[in-house]
Image (cartoon, rainbow, N blue to C red; front, side, top):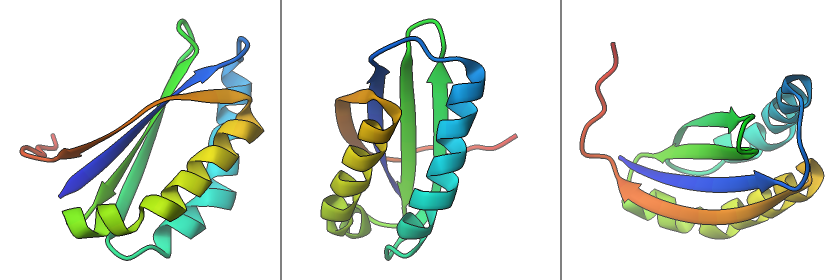
Length: 102
């Protein structure tokens, strides 16, 4: 399994309510697009209100699936950052070597 981790930074302070609204927009607008991509497994979003940074972590069945989703993922990332008023700080890709759930 592979992950793509996108890091964003808010251009202005954001309330918890606003973060939840952004997450709901991601669920309704972007998640259907992600689910349509071959090899997509799941997504996790997290927000740190103190730093104004947020993360999205998308999980992919294979490296090939991750790589073939790059163009569509770039478009989704750009649109979501613009709508939220965020800047994209970093995008990294990793192979998952341990996935233990409690």
